[in-house]
Length: 143
Image (cartoon, rainbow, N blue to C red; front, side):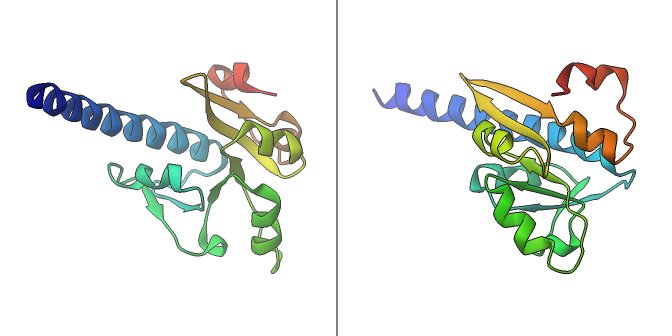
């Protein structure tokens, strides 16, 4: 029984590390659609996404949304109110489908898990409004 628990813990740890690397890479790919900075500053208020900073030197965690190139949240409206006080342009990625659908007027896109799979959506209205060039490989994620 102890061996089974030990093996389970090792597999779970390896899976968790791989998952955080995947999340970090997807977030970085989304961020590079809106900025050409080599190191992207990200503000996160969703605890499920705090692990993206541990394995990537190309994303930097900031503790103030005014410093961020990208905001990752499950409450887009609150983030917009907080960060838009000083006319700061906000690029928001929703971490739940519900938040994205309810806040399509402010969310650049969404990155969330559904039925155990990663899903990404990019808001075509905001992309068009901001005149962002989306590569052909991302066209399938436009909503």
